[in-house]
Image 1 (spheres, helix red, strand yellow):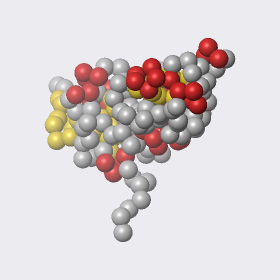
Image 2 (cartoon, rainbow, N blue to C red):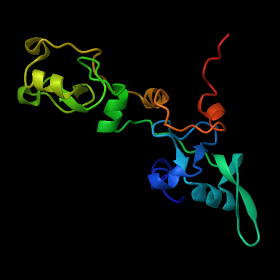
Image 3 (cartoon, one colour):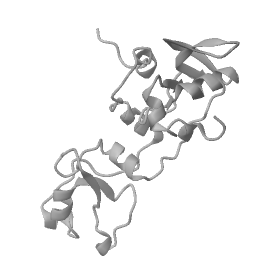
Length: 194
């Protein structure tokens, strides 16, 4: 629990298989959507015991010590607000998330790599504005050619995403398992159907 809250929740994926707790910031929004901010139940119980979080929803299962019993938390809220990062790190994952895990030339999903729009051999740099997600066939087809020479075109021009934009993009990719107690907190600001 000590340390950076943005990374501690992804420590041990195996521990998240049994009763994970959705971690909300003090404003009742998830710390992150993709990956979803989850803690193993043990971390959530520890944080509650140390009075660092409030429990807002629980599983039916109970854990016991010799002197205490507690329902396993399914949703916890941090008591102290963690200010979201404004700068988005230029990582392969964030690049794929910006491009919605699609090849920016043909729209294919699946086995992606990244491609320099202006090839490095022609002076292109590795930056948000010059790198896109690409499938292997498109990447090979383009090679070190310009877009015009390769006959390819971009679905949309590459650009630096904002932190809020990337967080919202992550909402489009929910994890394989969503506990019913999480749904109201994940999509509370979504537009309601009339």
